[in-house]
Image 1: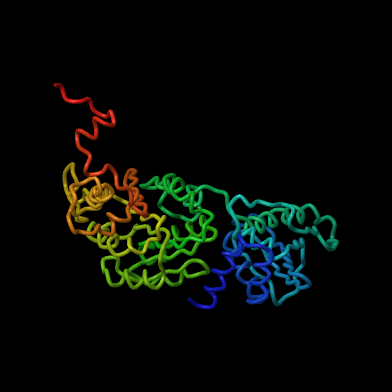
Image 2: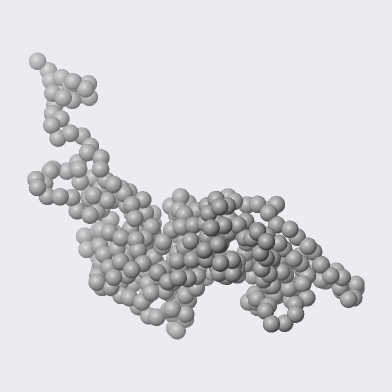
Length: 391
């Protein structure tokens, strides 16, 4: 792990830490380094600006007696800039303790505070008062944009999907409602998520779903895997990797370097053979309590993807894999295989939840013994579960 990645990981984890722990991090890493991490995150989270005229807003971050100023230039249809070289015309000053911004960005999703900053509106008098109404309107809009970047977004995944251009909602798929239900317990955690398939056609860079996941998991590290180099997408908390999901050695090497993962999502080629290869290689690298997700199960019925024509998917398909996992989930109820240890999936699959064209496989400890093998009719009669045989 690089020094930058290590610092980012420490700042993320500080979101639920004590004041003393955050102060110790700032002391060790330096206030400037920590602020660079925070400003990068604020820029990523900000809503699209709506003010038509440029507005400069100062964000002053303090820690003890130290104070650092970052000036954001905000205007519609342009990326938000950090103003360094020229003398800005500050329309608003926001001052906040660096510990409060760490918690705003990387604390729990329900950490929504308003009384944690100082606000100075129009610190200097405009030269022409007739400009004041327009200045006020633009400053209010720009301030809302900046503050949107200083909080955990509370939009649902459907809205995030549309905002980032992902096809997981309102396209051929309606997946995000299922994702929101399945991922709710992970939202506040510093998850590591790997998605197979970055997207991008006809020379496009792709990556909309990766950005959606980065927005949703405000403490998460997101990795994408693609056949082609998409490293131009790389930014804090988002890394594009190159590899073939049909190559077991490649997948294992990636998992060894970047895993274990809390969540793996297969939205890759949808070739049934690739889906099974990826699952077999990566499921062992999903943490206990994590999820492995397979999208686009419909290709189990498409022969051109290696599926089975007709009304029943064969055992070599993605749906066939899920049928096998249901058997593995219940392996302790089956006839005992003397001397054979359980397989990885028999030992660790604890849930298989299937919706139309998408499945969530939960990993854990499949340790329930079930009904003892020695239970016979006499034992069931003793429990009152079945009536005694007639004399």
